[in-house]
Image 1 (cartoon, rainbow, N blue to C red):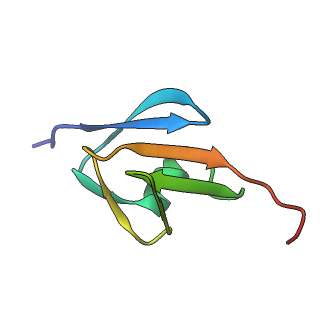
Image 2 (cartoon, helix red, strand yellow):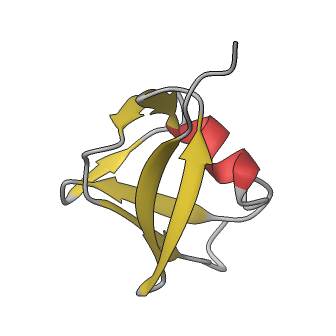
Length: 73
């Protein structure tokens, strides 16, 4: 049997997008990989808080992804 897909609403640089996963909770890393953004410098804000790659997010969270590139690295 197949699991029902769960919708995650994400804003990428202010543009809304819907993503679908098999679980109500996923890792930030998995979200970035599905968007093919893991190789660049992106900040993921969940409920207005900055999260790391290994933290979990829920489909009911307010998720915003912003592109930050600093030449100081």
